[in-house]
Amino acid sequence: MNFSKSFRNTFLVILLSLIVSACATKKTTTTVEGQMQGDVYTGTDTVKYLADGVPDRVFFATNESILTTKSRDTLRKQANWLRENSSINVMVEGHADERGTREYNLALGERRANAAKDYLITYGISADRISVISYGKERPVDSGSNPLSWSKNRRSVTVKAN
Amino acid sequence: MIRIINLFFIIFFLLSAKAYSLIEIDITRGNLDPLPIAVSPLFQDDSSKRNSINELKIENVGSEISLVVENNLKISGLFNPLSKEAFLQKPDIAHLKPRFEDWALIKAQALITGKVTIEDKKLKVEFRLWDILAGREMMALAFTTVPSNWRRVGHIISDKVYERLTGEKGYFDTRIIYVSEEGPKTARVKKLAIMDQDGFNTKYLTLGNELVLTPRFNPTSQMVTYLSYFKNLPRVYLLDIETGTQEVVGDFPGMTFAPRFSPDGKKIIMSFAKDGNSDIYTMDLENRIVERITNHPSIDTSPSYSPDNRFITFNSDRSGFQQIYVMKSDGSNVKRISFGKGLYGTPVWSPRGDLIAFTKLHKGKFYIGVMRTDGSGERLLTENYYQEAPSWSPNGRVLIFYRETKSNDKGEGFSAKLWSIDLTGYNERQVQTETDASDPSWSSLLSN
Image 1: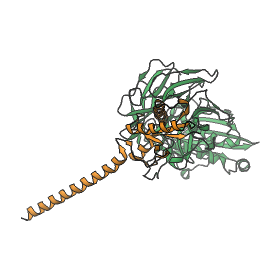
Image 2: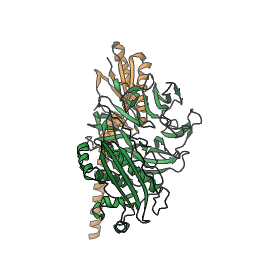
Image 3: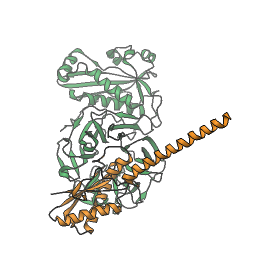
């Protein structure tokens, strides 16, 4: 009977550890899920506001310059704000994360800034009110070396130019 | 601004250049058995010693020059300089006629001896290279220069010895231009810096007021092209190191970046970004004519000419991801050459013409590698968390690049340093710099 008892104990230990590890896995997933979708940052840690309810930045997936649904929503808010404040010009800064070669990242940042600029133009903002600049990987906002930090750095930021 | 002083060297005697010798070094393979060499301190007489103190504030410049030589030979990985404490013969006597048995006893296979004199504000140096096994002189040279050039004398001696024993040009009398980095990751201050290949004589060429990136030498190493964010307009600039004059390259209505000189020095090749699309352009430095080389909706960047100016290798994501391409220098015949797993960037053509060095990113690791110009024979030399941007030594035997370390979640523990590795994949070592450093570019040989 000793055998079956120790067997049962082992079984319990395994079961318990499975439950614990399941909880742990679930917990990490939710934390990241709160701030990233795929590898696009969806949190608000680094976001500043051009005006009440008008976020200044949008985020991109690795190596991508495609605007997500949320990015397009943010840019429409920026376009509305720009329409209401017709004397304000902006500069769109394009940025990349640190996991790429410097020169390619400069080009990628330029591509991201232009994706944001083009969307603002589609929503009626005149091209001569929007300039772009790429900083490549030179101006990270988060200095960590992990997927969440990198996701915050893959961004375009609209800043007032006058 | 730094002034490159021309070094005049006079060859007094050149004996036994073709003499048969028993020692030679094969540098095409990894050298796990470096050649034991004795570098005797160069002899300096008492009157020169006084002049040396007056002119240079150095008591024994002969001994200092021998240390420069010793360090160069050591970092090449091909030589094993023996401890001076074991030397049995005095420098002046050894220079006249070494007792070969004594040097053989301490297992030296080659010996460098020499003599320096400082007179009338002139530094006169003669040196000899001896083959211990054959018991004969292999080379003897002498030159005269200004005393402040004493480190360069050490580099030139190193180049002569390297060339005599390997059959290929050396790379010691050269400089590295790079970007000096300071401050936190989110607000890095970057300056252009230049130093001797062994890390000495560092000079800063910009003040750090604006972001500067990717400096590269022209073939004579008198000019540098680089990217500056002066007035927040990222543009390619041209800097004359001797005069300090700077100018914008061309009149582009947007960002220009990733500049390099053509090997004949007549053009600058670079990327120009317009409406989010980067293509490759050249500008002729004589007549200022701008030519568009690629015309593709993808990113085309990091261009580098073949040494004969006939081809260009570059980085493009036209296949969907970063890959390496080769085309004729007029932009025709574009061919993809990288087909391995992962992303490829920063192709740079070897000065010997047969290889292209690159950065590869695969499964979260960065590699420096080389492949033949048709993409065959890919060989990865080093793997790390982050490293990129190789630049060739002028003899095509060594690559210098930069490496960044991983930071923790607070951004601590980050550093950027220069590293070098032999084409063989051996002899990986950190290159000393005063500050953190990135984007190194190797000059040509300064003295020939």
